[in-house]
Image (tube, rainbow, N blue to C red; front, top):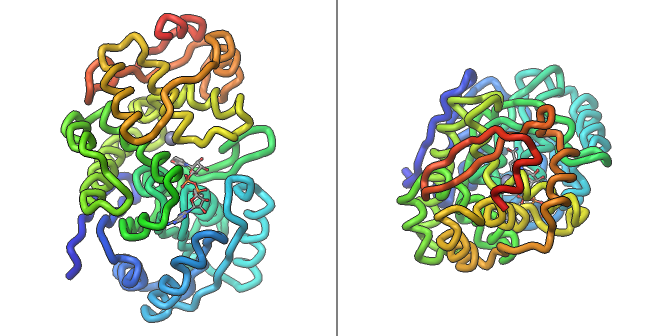
Length: 344
Ligand SMILES: NC(=O)c1ccc[n+]([C@@H]2O[C@H](COP(=O)([O-])OP(=O)(O)OC[C@H]3O[C@@H](n4cnc5c(N)ncnc54)[C@H](O)[C@@H]3O)[C@@H](O)[C@H]2O)c1
Ligand SMILES: [Zn+2]
């Protein structure tokens, strides 16, 4: 048996996240172990990932006895929209997929979000299995059950909570990531360390690369930390907001740049900006530098405020911000939006 971690996510429809190496070649077998009724699989991937890993995935699914229908979309956030969703639903219907068939997502967060959403609405919900191929998707997007797509009016405005039936994080798949995409994922990893795990922070001080053996350990720890928060707050009414550390300001930066600043970079800047007056600031900046992440932006306090007041996450004029004053501990503070300037 291959050495791997299995992390349980104890929500209403609980599931496991497998973290290890060389897992892709047996993905069909792992899916089969969770449910023997599935006969057909709708495999969703995109144009950058498919040439790298599609054949291996299809082989494994076929070996496990599945009939496979494949859908490949153009890589990139601009594909995460309702037109793609409609196309996929059409193919599922044309091929007479039933409620006991399933969707498998093979790709980064764009793929796992969109395929998860398709699975959540086809026939009012069929199973989805996530095989995340970016660091960000392994530690964040594929775990927790948030699925959805963008509208031209804004990101992630349409979606559903739909927990996967299994998540397979094969760390070998990360070795082909480009440096920017890898660093972006590290932005989220650093977030977990600062909001909840000082030991993880210590481990990150020795620079990890996309081929490090230690990556497995780090991914597993981040998944555990996310699972813990998701279990306590499945529908995002409270504690889950700690995961938004750096995101309140990060979203404004992303939006202002018209999404030319990548998410992980915007979050890195957002974490640094909201922590400017915190005792952790210099340690945070050191770590962001170590992973080639940015920590400064010329955005003004007024621009941040304007952006936040237009953001879907505001409730009235009060907002909840995640603040870190000690590495490994996060506080949620609900304040008037205008008071945010006291942190900046
Ligand atoms: N559901 C959630 O809880 C949640 C959380 C965080 C982010 N997200 C969503 O995730 C998306 C961002 O995820 P992402 O950064 O993974 O984006 P992505 O899926 O666009 O992947 C980033 C880039 O890496 C490429 N790629 C993917 N895997 C690769 C591999 N193994 N080797 C080489 N290249 C590879 C992709 O083609 C793409 O160009 C956003 O849409 C965001 O809204 C969702
Ligand atoms: Zn994020």
